[in-house]
Image (cartoon, rainbow, N blue to C red; front, side, top):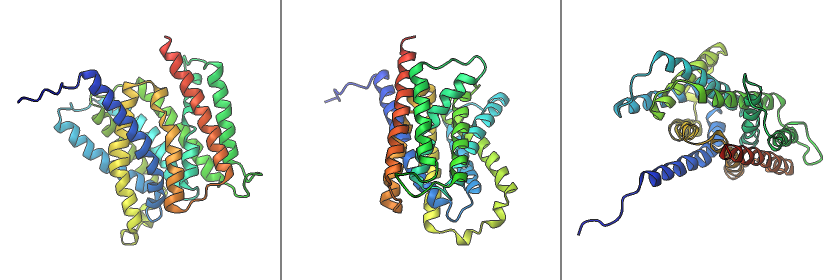
Amino acid sequence: MPDQTPAATPNQSSTRTLWIAFAAVYLVWGATYLAIRYAVQTIPPFLMGGSRFLVSGIILFAWARSHGALIPTRRQWRDAAVVGTLLLCGGNGAVGWAEQRVPSGITALLVASVPLWMVVIDWLRPNGKRPPVIVGLGVVVGLGGVAVLALPGTMLSSAHVDPAGALVLLFGSISWAAGSIYSRHTSRPASAAMTTALQMIAGSGALAIISIVAGEPGRFHPGQMTMPSFLGWAYLVTFGSLVGFTAYIYLLRETTPAKATTYAYVNPIVAVVLGWMVASEPIEPRTVVAAVIILASVAMITIAGGSEREQR
């Protein structure tokens, strides 16, 4: 008998793809913080990031071309270079450097401030829109959570987060937020995979320049690279870049930025739990309090932002 199972409708297929993309940025990216921690143990951070995105970008470029994607225009390369530099060099490069000093779970919590900076940048940019009161309150609450986590030891903990690492992570979060907003106004290929590939290749070039200026190639000795570092790098190339970043670019195109950035709810939880289970990173009261404050602020911003768009 012929198969009587009805085929999935376009809407059902699109919904399923969205759920898969959300799952990728939620879980896969949550684990990247631990992978970065191991990768930078024996691979200099900017060299690690540049090589990671170069390999991923070339693979994705070849895949996109083999599936019919057109050769990118000069303008598309230019815009991809800006976005790739902001997202991958500024954002991921900061994470790689900072994880030499800051635990992976706390790193993820500081990076969770990205939606806060997106609101601020979207407001301050030319012709920007002033955020609703509830969103502004969410920004203030979120910055308070960042302060609880990043400032020296409090009554909740005698430990302190490395100030240089925290500052670099905040810079990286602002860079990622700026790149995410700028990406909405760029010329880009019709293929999401090609868009991602261009940004990875461009971002890897910016990371390579910083790596060379910092003298990293002279300090890297392949024979001294440990297996955990290699496995962390391999995970970042495959899952972190090819799967996670492609899913994020897809979500930026197919959903509102408020929904796309909901990964900030889940990534820190995944990172904190994995850091505790695998790397024995302590979970202190201050970490829990800061997590609740930061994630509550992200929830306020996301829900308010989503409701505002639905009313238009």
